[in-house]
Length: 105
Image 1 (cartoon, rainbow, N blue to C red):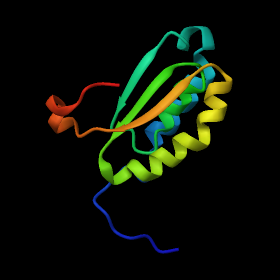
Image 2 (image 1 turned 90 degrees about the horizontal axis):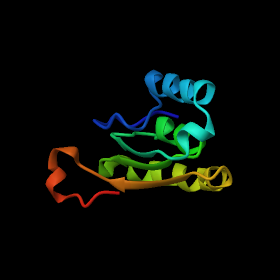
Image 3 (image 1 turned 60 degrees about the horizontal axis):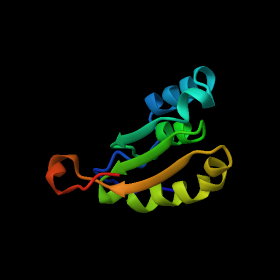
Image 4 (image 1 turned 180 degrees about the vertical axis):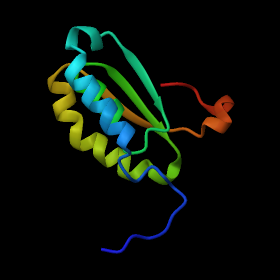
């Protein structure tokens, strides 16, 4: 189907996200990831943060409101798998140009 032009770049999986997810999967252990608390700024689809959560990390994905619905849906779909390995994941809207308004994860 045709795509609607948008200025948002967070609706696609970028190559760097795939590389990060593969790196996490192939290199890091659950023992290394489980104590981590991660905030991913500008997560887009959240592939990097989800990879860490699937290794047991406690991850907060953040991005602008334009990607919130899609990323939140992905978080909800992956939560059972994440919880099954002892990880945690959530999404929060964050405009990193206005950090003074954010109360943290």
